[in-house]
Amino acid sequence: MRPTLWQRMDVMARHMVPFVLVLMLVLIAATPTHVPGMVRVGPMLSLIGVYYWSVYRPDLFRYGSAFALGLFEDILTGAPLGSGALMLVIASAIVVGQYKFFNGKPFIVTWWAFAIVALAAAGTRWLAVSVLYGDIVDLQTIGVEYLLTVALYPVVGWLMARAQMLLIKDA
Amino acid sequence: MAMNRLGALKGVMQRFAVVALVVAAFALMLLGKADTVAVERLRTTVADAVAPVLDVISRPAESVADGVEYVQGLMHLHDENARLTAENARLLRWQMVARQLEAENDALKALLNYAPAPQASYITGRVVADTGGAFAHSLLMLAGRSDGLRKGQAVMTGEGLVGRVAEVGARASRVLLLTDINSRIPVMVGEGRQRAILAGENTDRPRLIYLPANAGVAPGDLVTTSGVAGAFPMGLPVGVVASVEDGVVRVAPYVQRDRLEMVRALDYGLDGILTGAALD
Image (cartoon, rainbow over all chains, first blue to last red; front, side, top):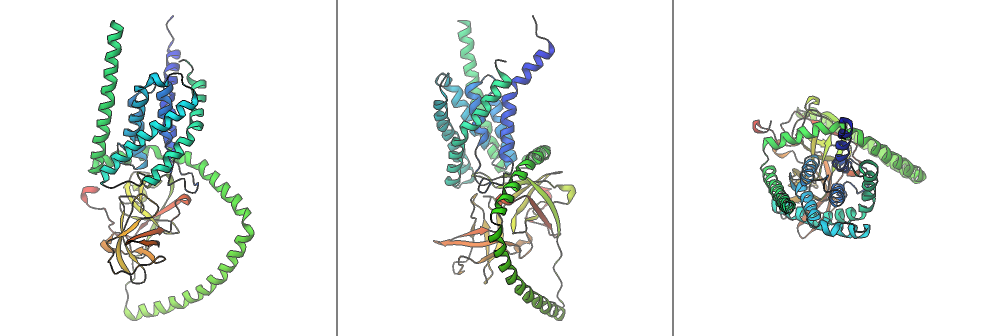
């Protein structure tokens, strides 16, 4: 039986969920929280989102999505254009390249792996921007941001998992 | 067999996509560095499009922050009251001194036929995105070209200088904070009114460069804009010297970034730091 138009649109909408959710993370990260100290060091929420969907639904989250979202974040935050896109594409590529490793691993392992992937991706961005400016970008700030991001992974990852169960299932 | 070959082809294609996107990212970084008109237009267009969404998202965050502040205020009510009473008494004495000085100043100005500096008009906007971190220190304010915002205008809060308008869109504009790595602001320091440039480094504490070696700057010295190069008007409060170590002078800005809700751009009718036909 051929799926009706509504069914096809429904599937299509569900397939866009990962992209939309990471887009929301990008917007939330840019919102002023007025938490003391939080404006200076914000967690890299988009990196968590990209990592999560690259691990669990790489079929719905391609490199192009990672690139587009990274570019959007660069434009929004005023960061060097392309640097965020670089970070997200690298994170996504590492995960998809090692999909055999990630397949069916328990949460604690994916968390630990996230710490490594995030280190590689954020480190590459740091290096690229430092070369671009011809000046070492402050390591302390990015170090704190990195630790915050790794610490927040369980929370954001859980939210993403809830959304995956509710909205995507096997679609 | 055919499936296998298809899979291999797919793998090659994917790898090619990654390489292409990484190359594209580097190309964009170089393009952005060249500071072309196209890149700026792209930035302002996106900012304009997203500003209403950010405006909606930022409101609940602001309410939560206000609520937290209210509760904190309640807890410190008594101490705060005692502090303010003392401060009020001190300020009243200062007010008297200020009145006398003002009268004296007016009299002296009248003697000298002094031409007063132009008065500023303000353009106020809500902060809808505040992004700081290792890579950029900037914010988006909800005000644009139609409100009279122009590139290069000084942006302030009640506390002091925030930065300058870097990109102007139709309804949202980007403010480059004085702590951003691309920010250079002509300032003067201390009672000697030593000229220097305040250079951001994407940290909390921008540093003073081009300060004369024998400037004699010490922690606690006030830093204000110098008005050199017609960039900013003279005398806007910026911050205080925080530390002097091995010839590196760092400044603590007055502005508290986590409190930024509203900012205002100053329109003095000056040209600003970045005008010119090429940039309009």
